[in-house]
Length: 338
Image (cartoon, rainbow, N blue to C red):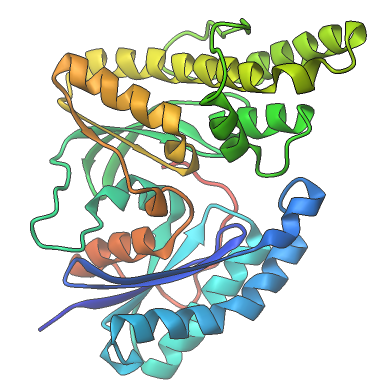
């Protein structure tokens, strides 16, 4: 009998629903919220209200595109955390209500696990997926982690950021440059046109496999402050070079720790995930690193780098097969480690 999972994602500002049947993706619908752009960041209260408006039509669209009736669902997988509590409450409450109405079991999913397992999303039976164990570089707005993945339910964090994440460094530096929110994609676009050797920014010297990006951010800020004091048009004249130099520095920081983790673990497969894995420079650098060392690389489709329900449904599918169901007394959580 087929196993059909509805996935629901509402951890931040994207409302998403997806349907997976027997491990194959049938649909993935995402409703993004543009209202946060004028505030330069996600406003939690506005995000949760938008989720309330979006979740019913998004779920309905996911089921219709998949050609699946709600009564065919084997289980409902939902993001329980980490994320914004108000946003998570919308998805959790909807999942509980739908589960009760359909008398269908629920599966709770760790949002970070979803990003790690996004490489198992398949549209066809012969789509390539990683073999365990593999190393994941999880890079997003809130997380920069190196994770050894032994199985879908056996993950070990080898290193994590002790302050800002890579995504925060991109977005905060972009804001200083006067770029719109979210700044990461704008940095990526400008970097393609700039000279990455034009500027040098501070890189951290953190022992082990942990990351730090606060020093880079401060170095970037001081460079701009001192230059603008001499030339008020400095940023406008050097936007592309600043973006390229910033992107190069972040990539160097990421790859330095990745290389140490590869040597320490001896893994032969490396994957990246999270919103920053959509960055062109990061994708190219990781692919090149793996190619030069004879390591298999898994670079996700851009559609699966940001918050999406396909990864939630996939993680839920694995948990369903192991009968790891969730009770109605479970509540969302804002923070957790893998």
